[in-house]
Image (cartoon, rainbow, N blue to C red; front, side, top):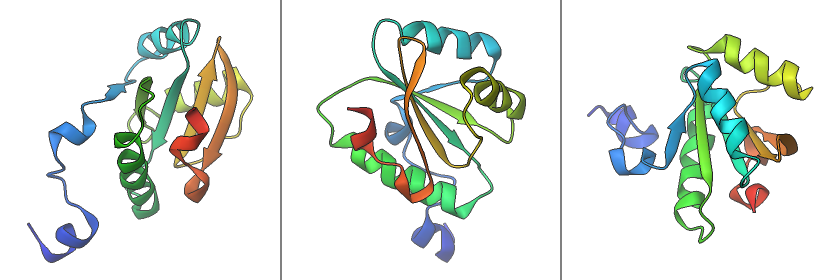
Length: 125
């Protein structure tokens, strides 16, 4: 592991840290996530894998989630690899695309959204 990986986190993140994420990699995955929102609140984290700020926000968010008693479905979208799905989210819900971005959905509607340093686990409870 390089010096910078030790400071900023490398590619070898603990698999347990990501175990709570459900990945969105297709329009079908997105449809399933939206369907789940009719049963309980969900959150989608849109992440740019090439952006240092996005990576930092993601790590901080994951630390906060670890401390939450409230468990819910958390979805992860790599918006560089699945940009068309990110665009679909923006169009379908009428929200501006940002990165990183946390979108909280309940009953098929966005009830909260935040980006950059405004992203916090408190927004999903």
